[in-house]
Every structure is written in C-alpha cells, then in structure tokens.
Image (cartoon, rainbow, N blue to C red; front, top):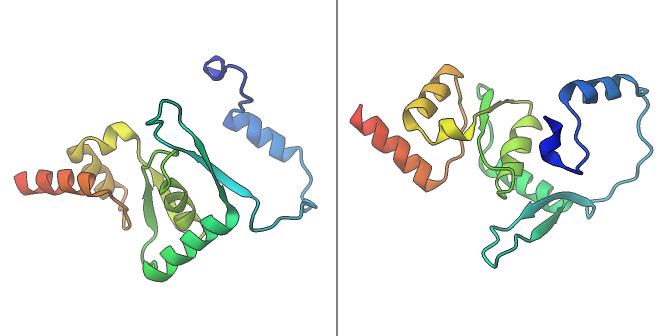
Length: 148
C-alpha cells in the first residue's frame, strides 16, 4: 500500500524491474568523485528532532576497506546477515561489506532478532557464517544458549 508513504516517490519491485528493462545497456555518462554523497543517516533525535548526517563515498569506502583488511572473509564464508536498522551507522558496512565481496546477504527481520531462540534457529537454518552483533544482542544469545 503506497498510501502510507504520502508524497514520497515509491516504486514496487515490479515497477523497478520494468523500468530497468526499458533502459538501454549503455553506461551512464555521470562523473563521480569521492566527496559525493553516499548515504544520509539520522541521529536518534535526543534534542527532539533527528538530524541528518551526510556521509560521502570516501567515508564509506574507508570504513569498508578497514573492515576487509582487519576482518577479511575466509574463502568458505558465503552467507552474511543484515539485521541492523538502516538509520544506524553500521547498516551500510553490514550491507555493502558483504555484497561487494560477493557474499550472500540474508535479511533477518527485527522481530526475529529480538527473540534469541528464533534468531539462533534462523542463523542455523540459513547457514550463516558471518554476523556482526552489538554486545547486548550477543549477551542475550549467549544467555539463551547457556539455558539450553
């Protein structure tokens, strides 16, 4: 139901697929540079109004290069998880760190990550080999595993 998005331009997957089929296969003539905007993340709004933080491509690439250097993928690591809110700074490297290295990204809904039993079951079912966790989520998972 697109009505929930009010005046925002929204496309369904099917509309996007059709739009791409209508385009030519030619490369776009669009010069880019490392200081162009890559993403906008929003603060928690602790002052009452969330503020947008603009991150250029150079910042995102720097973070990804650090991640790949310090935490390289093993050849047998194929499946990774995306479970972080898109407004959180770690969502971008969680998505692009895996995809740009040719890994499969499994999207896990928030209602599953909040339930350690279901979350661990999903990790096993999907054969997840790489996972980034905040300490509180790791703690809840470890507590659940200790009870088993």
